[in-house]
Length: 281
Image (tube, helix red, strand yellow):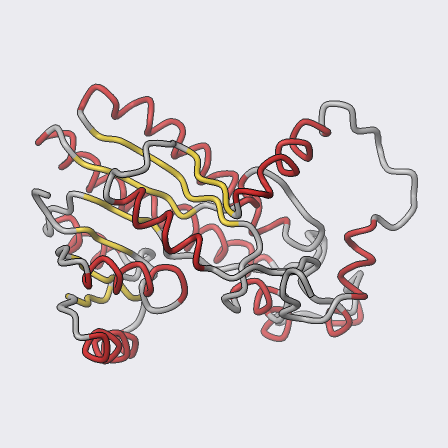
């Protein structure tokens, strides 16, 4: 591999584990983390695993961080940095909506622009987006997050077509509900809203992420394979067994009618389910 693998959002979750696994396999990895405090923590995790891992502050919303990252000549870029804002689309405050898109869409795409041009100039490289099943489907209370991932899907698709003749490949990872804490904290962001709770449509203290969640191991394994070019699929939806259901949900939109005024099942499930409910329980 001509250059390093740059992973953003490597301070926790998918990004951190994938960075550590790639480093353990002997690959040159740059783990980009959002804040300086995470640098020390990820370096400590690398020492515990006995691996060599370069850790750098890469806040994708910071122009200076993005420009610095362009100088590292990454051969592979994993756009993994992301946040999730839960809540009804009619309730989420403006600043929270804008933050959702700054972190999930604008920051990663602006970072990708500089990396992609360098890859195109040397006619090699791989760009991978950590998207989501929410880039393909939408659930209640995830409109802001899903909208940002739908935007990521559009950019990734366009880039795949535009960079083909320059020797650069593009792929997406589309995790479903995995038990990393990410989904459950999405349903706690309302605690930071600066609004009048009396004006909200919903009492968010009563709601939870409306899906049972899976062990994240398949995401770690597939992401490593995609980054190394061992997996050639453009879209990588996980868990694999949920692909038929996701296809049905996408196709159902063609026949969907306007709502009949009754509460949808997934809205009710958000009231009924406990946070961090594992699949198969």
